[in-house]
Length: 121
Image (cartoon, rainbow, N blue to C red):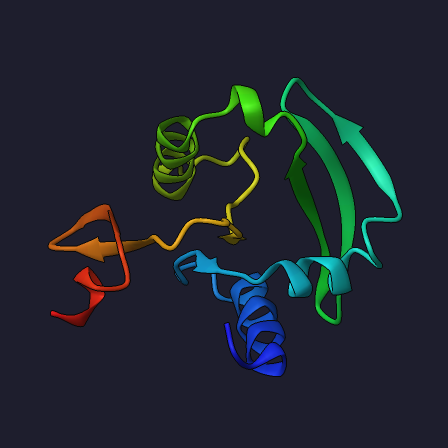
């Protein structure tokens, strides 16, 4: 992401628009909304969950810590699963940050991962 203000605006919009799709986020944006990952609110097998603060509300940000045990394929599978989940007992998935050069996009009703060169079509 090249525009941090647009990222924050888009993230705020996601909180109020329940039909909005998850978006890619920069690591800098996540650092900003979590105050540099300062408030831990939980943890699990693959990472720590931090409190994030936006103007329109609070969000949870999970930061993976065991990336050596979490392959790119596992990350992709988890990302695509979280994007599809819609249930009243499951937290809504707003966005993701990844070190890869790929991005999840909706193509003909299915979420697929594309590299920057594939996004050109």
